[in-house]
Image (cartoon, rainbow, N blue to C red; front, side, top):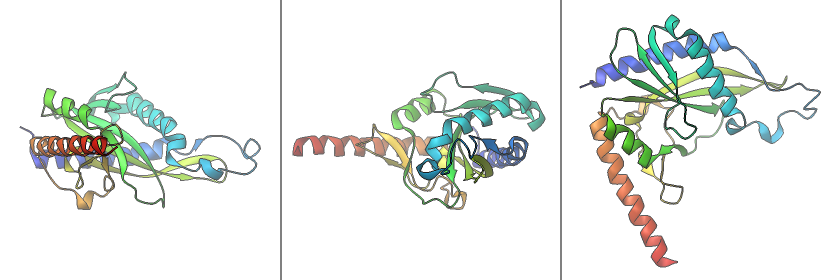
Length: 214
């Protein structure tokens, strides 16, 4: 059984890896000022470039994973998987899964989608030892129509302080504190799964009640 301390150690190692990876990647050019004479405008949002960012992170990690002390790095083949890549450190038997997200530097804190609750339930039910981390990369939109990665935050999904399943949004687990490791609730995967399943029941009850009222 993987302990809370082991999860914390994995989290710290991932943040160290990402600090180095951010420096390696550098600015990512999206266009030129000639192509975008009025700049980013409404496109200065994380969801505008998140897929490019995810691909850059995964490809660079895959290209140099051994340099970061990893023995395995596999990208998910599915577009709807709850994780983007599966890694394993050379001196650890833990199966580590990364869910890459983006956040805009200086942006507001919102309750954002983490993943579909039913997918998370299945993921941990298949193997409760799996270590799933939300890896948020903070991006800054530059005037030359490039983006830069300026920071990263790693949160074990089991440690999310606010577990909420939205009944009207395809049953997604949502959180507004997935970047705030100082607010983490250090649970085991078993504890998280129980709380998630309890929230799923609440969401189903709310959805059923809404149908009756309509």
